[in-house]
Image (tube, rainbow, N blue to C red; front, side):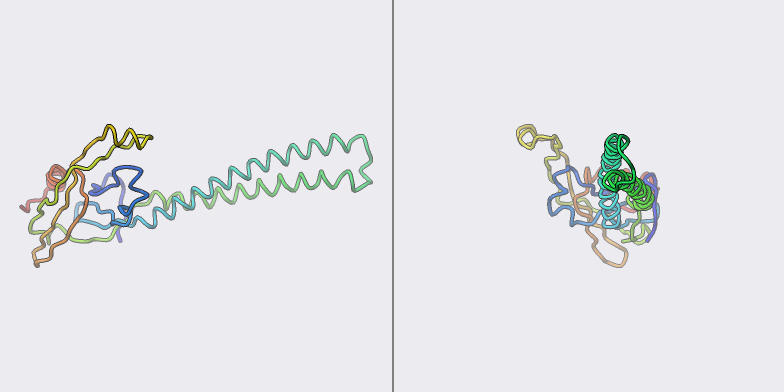
Amino acid sequence: MRKFNYNEIVILNPLQTRYQMMSSRVLIPLYAAANDGIYRMNRAKRIKGFTVTLGITIGIIVLAFLVIFGIYFVFLSLSLTLPASFTDPVYWIPTLIGVGLVAGSVFGIIKLVKIGKRFGKIANELEGELVVSWSQVKTITVMNVRQENVANRPSLVLNIIAPTYKEIGDWHVLTTDGRDITIPNVDDPQNKLNYVKNRFNLNFS
C-alpha cells in the first residue's frame, strides 16, 4: 500500500453521479494513475472513515441539544427552588440532574470531537495497491467506448428529460509478460490516456 496526496494521482474511473452510489458501480474498484503505475485505491477504508465521521457529527448535534435542554432544565429548577428550602430533596435533586446532564453531554462532545478528528483523517487519506507499474506496460488500448448519461441534477425526471452525455470506456492494459488488465469505466478515456502519458512522461504505445 502507498499513501497519496490528491495532486499526485489521476483518478481513472470516478463515480459520475450521486445515483451511482446506490448502484452496482460502487462494487467496481477505483483506479488511479500515479508516477510509477496504476493503483487500485482503498475505497472501503475511506468510506468507513466517512461513515464514522458522519455518525460522530450526528452524535455531537444530539449532545448539543441535550446541553441546551440541560441548561434550560437547571434554570427552570432553580426558578422553582430558590423560593423554597434546599433541605427538601424534592427541590434540589432536579437541579443536580440538570447539571449532570449538561456536564455529561459536554464531556461526550469533547470525546466525540477527539474521535472525529482521528476518523476524519482516515476519511481524507488516499492509499492504493499497485496493480501494474509503467515499466511493465507494453500498450494501453481504449475499448468499449459508449455514451453514458451523467446528469446529476436533484430531479431524476430532469436527468431523464434533459440528459448530459459523457464518453466512458475501458482501458485494456497489455503488459510485457502478456497479461491483459482491464480498467473499467474510465471517463473521457482517450483524452485521459493522453493526459496521463504526458503528465508522467510515458512512452509506451
